[in-house]
Amino acid sequence: MRNSNKDAANRISRFRQCLTGDRYNLYLVILLAVFAIFQLVRNIWMGVHIDEANWWMQTKHLTTGYFFHPPFIVYQQFVITSIFGDSPLALRLGSIFFTTLNLFIVFILVKEMFGNTKLAFYSALLIAILPITMYWMVIGFQDPPFFFFFLLSILLVWRAVDREKRGYWYLAGISAGFMLLCKLEAALFFVGLLLFLLSSRPQRRWLRTKEPYLGFLIVVVMFSPTIAWYASRGFEPITYQLTNRPGFLEFGLINYIIQILKHIGWEMAVLSYPVYLLSLFGLIYGGYRGLKGKDTRFQLLFWISV
Figure (cartoon, helix red, strand yellow):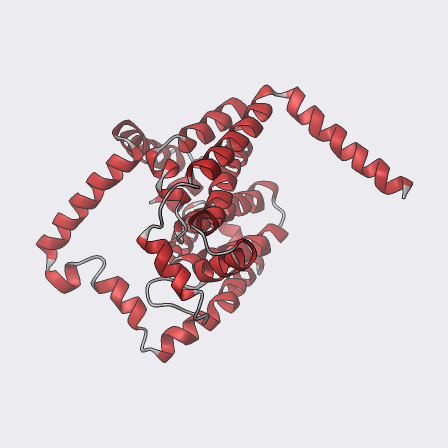
């Protein structure tokens, strides 16, 4: 009993030292608290979005797959509404939770990659005040948990290659498995990761070890019930994503280009034009630093992003 009390006291002491040792750690705690409280209060009076209504209805029919997206969001909403009831705020609790965690993961990722808590804090702050974060990322649908597991997977892969600790590949596999259970677009993450390992000579050695493959096997096992569900329906949900959503297979190349331009316009609006242009510059600059300068940080971020 004394040892447990002593351990708890040591943890509290380390936490206090963390907050007082670097003021940006304290700023982050304040940012997370303000963001979460603001969103909780604001969403008390918000109506139900059509996507939220759809996923709430799906909680009445639990299965291993759904037409538009994999099942994570349905099970998330099922658990939350079972505990907190069927209300607009309850439908958004998961998204508020995951989006708040997203800000924390961004802080940790930037801090570990670049060793700068000031840069890490302002990165989290910038994302917190974006229009897409303030509105869209607190709606009860699949994107908030998807981005959480996306960021967490990047962080775990980075720790695997930076710290050379193989166990992180297994954790990354679990995180990536949940990411794929949120959205099928997560499959592109594995393409980017493979290109990163192939293009980086120091990291290419990981392809000769078992850990990345076992990590991917974890993803396959986690997603196999959903794949079986898709197979039982002739993979129609996947073919729908490849035809109707992009447009060019269904309506022609010109229409596809028009749809892309419209989509870019909406992206610029929800991210804000300066941030969108800054992101494009960061992608180009990061690619140059990563591919020409052989900087592992930028190599990973470039290939995962592109």
